[in-house]
Length: 286
Image (cartoon, rainbow, N blue to C red; front, side):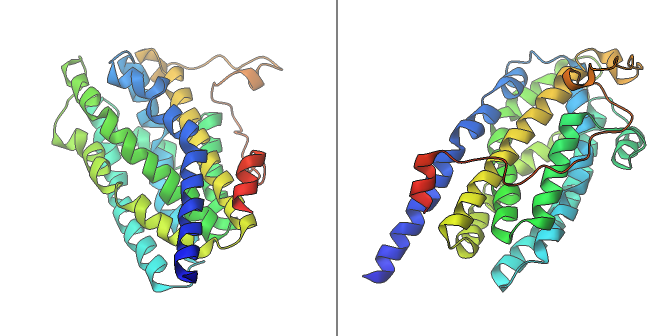
């Protein structure tokens, strides 16, 4: 009887987690960024923008997972993260193929990942957050924020966008072939399993109400920042020429309202306690 009660409590908490994330999850999978690709309303410049700007995040993703791997205390979680790191290394190459299909060069994508040019502020914030939560957060927070929230939403996003993405093959300057679509096709399938396993790891390590609240907040922050990074990168490169044109440096006081690249991106780490929970969620997790 005790085992059944404990199992039901765990299921209730995971249900609360999914419900708490639903608004941000839906905003990402069904919001402006997604519908622009589904309907084909993002111009080629915008498509190139997010493909270019998000590459450094994809490139660094295995390193983020490696930080979480250090915290594992059981073979199940360790094997999960080791396998995930191996797969994500290959996905970085697939992202380059996708960018090349839209006319980006391998060299400019790698140059951005190596820091030769600054990232847009909102893209940098996403990278800073995921790096921080994997290095400094608990294992449950790290896995929830990365392997559940980011990979899980990416899987849903890939399934929703694949047809619209492929339709760009009729546009001038786009080469749509199996290499171009490999990243999307892999994530539409692969990222259906990873979030499920990630939740098992989270449930094993988040055993107190306080830790579960932190897990919920961390996962929510990841979804918010991923959506913001994709939107910012798409909007910034609405015109094809924006990929090569130099930007006018913003005047003093304008940078807070501008998404243009700046010489020294704000790399301050986002506090993992900043995203609060509503009172009803807090009561459920106590």
